[in-house]
Image 1 (cartoon, rainbow, N blue to C red):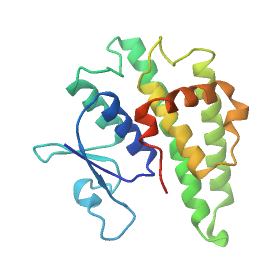
Image 2: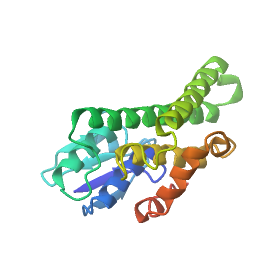
Image 3: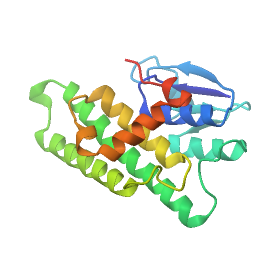
Length: 202
């Protein structure tokens, strides 16, 4: 299988971490979906990365759909629980982390526009969403070592990728000082090869 993504995509990083943790071999194809001649739109009509291209040529897109598929195709290191309530909690934290990432991406793209074209109301909305989401991620983790039980799940992976993206694009946001429990989780995740090998590169 082949993963088409960019090296800065936090959603692509989430998939790459899952592939590494589950020891699934794959080919990495790095693409910039913003370029006019990017082949991404031919694989995903939405023109977004990541896209997982299976051996039979089928394209799977949206990181949440991809990781769901990957967790089923390999018995190694299950990251999504089968028990309904635990599963709901893990996928809920993933959705929350992805929502924070969505807000961060929206902020980053808006701030790349010329100052006179930027929407102050839009920036305020996304900033509020981002900080509320961080508070919710911190509250859900509490003082536990992981979001669920005594082992890493997809909830931790998603949160770690979100925090990594903030470090890349918004180093001035002091989420470590505001949420020491998230900082401890991020440090623990960065001790793993799957996170070390997927640090976003500009």
